Structures are given as structure tokens and as C-alpha cells.
Amino acid sequence: PPPRTRPSEYLRQRCAACFGNVKHNASATADIFVCVDACFTQKRNKGAADPAKFHPNTHFIPEPLSVKMEHYVDAVRDTKPANKTQPASKKRKATVEEAPDEEDAAEDGYEYSLKVPRSVLDACEASFTAADQKSEKASTQFYDDTALMALLCRHDRVLWLVNMHSAGEKQFNVWLLLETLFQHLPPDITVGLLYDIACQLERSALRWGFLDRYIKRLTFAVAVFHAFGHDWACQLINHPRKRVGFGFTDREGCERFWHSISHLISLLRVSSVCSAPLEDIRPT
Image (cartoon, rainbow, N blue to C red; front, top):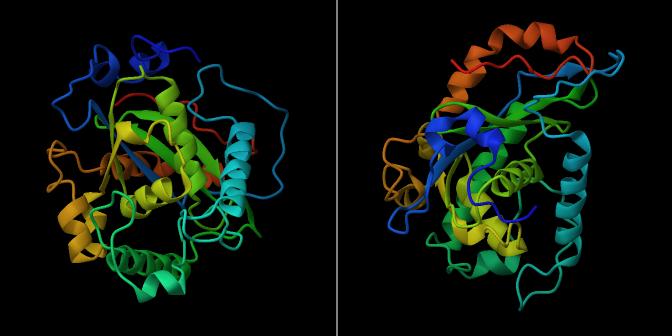
């Protein structure tokens, strides 16, 4: 879309406090703050089918865009070398888990502009990968939609949702939500992002060039209550209480949102693909 002079009407309707009169402040860490999280209790069983119906004011990003982003992320990882000195890696799926190469593990250091050493990032990655595999969050054998991923502003207003169709978190869902957000913002507005494994997300963005045209406008921090699962050195850099400018923004608005719609779990589990989207979300 053409460059905007103000946030889109869609964003202004979602949260006037964040987007109603936002201007770029060069002295601030970020002009707006958002958080991303996935909920694996919001699943939909296989087999339900009803006539198609679409809400004109939906929060959901269309499925074709999600598929397109997944294919793009997989294609980039299939063809692009991780850096200038290394050959192209073996095929990597579009997941949040990226196993470090043995050559990288043998020699510690800093990657790109990251302030956290490679060994620390590898330790954080291994910790969350093990937790993800142990929990077995959802199975594609029984569910068409295995989870919801949401993007919220700092005032707990839902900006966008995306249906997930895999047994674990996939990075392309986060890239899709952020790409959509930036397309609705003026070209000078900066964004502070809170995510459970923000350290791995930033690493992946710099390694593979995801959101390359927006990366300089994006600052990463981990969610407060997930920060303690990270290595101490990672916490010193990425904990929002230690990141200048994040203040008391903690990303726990996502948890409050999931709790507010928890009564819909049983209903949405058996609904059809066209009835499942939570189109009746209202500001609280």
C-alpha cells in the first residue's frame, strides 16, 4: 500500500489510545508497543463443515495470506545461506526452533548486531524447544485448527488473530501478524514487540532477512513471566524491565485475553471453520 500519514482507520478503531494521534518520537525506544502469544486450548476438531459466512469486521487474517507467508518463510530458509561465510543450510521448516550448526557451537561469539552471545541464545533455544516437545500442545491428527495466535496492543485490545494449523508454534505466524501491522502504520512509526521467545525471533529475523524493510523500526523484548525461562545473560538484555523505554509493559495482556474467552473453548472445539472465528470480540 502507499505510505500512510497516520495509522489506518482499522487500527484507530481498535485502540484510539495507541493509534489515534501517534507521532514518531525519535527519542523514544518505540512509538507503540504490541505483544504476541499463542493459545493451544483454542482448537477446532476435524470434520465440521457449514456454509461459508464471513464477518465484514473480522479480526482474523485471511487463510490465503497465512499460507503465502508460510511458503515464503520456508522458501527463504531453503535457498538463502545463514550468512556470507556459510553454505546454504539443510531444509528448515518455518518453526521457532532452529538447531545450531556444530561449527557454530564450537566457537562462541556474537551474531549480527545481537548483544547476547551465541552460546546463550542456543541455551535459550534448547530450553524452549524441550518444553515445547514435552508438552505436545496439539495434534494435527485430530484438529484442523490447533491454536490461535493473537497480536494485542499495550491496552489489551486485539488487533489481529490468526488460526494455526500445526502442532507447535511457527514463526511465519508472527511474521504475518507483524507484516500486517506495519502495513497499517506510517513509515516512520517504531514498534516495541514482546514475545515469549523474542531472542530467537530477532535472531531469525537477522539471519534470514525476515521483515528486512521493517527490522530497524522493531525492538524486541521477552514477556515478563516467560523471561525466567531464559538464560540469565539473555534476561539482562531482553527482559522488558531492563529494556529502556518498555516501562511496565509486560505482554500479559495476551494472558488476560485468553482467560476472557476461555468459556468459548468447548463451543469452538466443535464449530465449523466458518463459524469458529471469534467475531464478537468487544473492547472491555
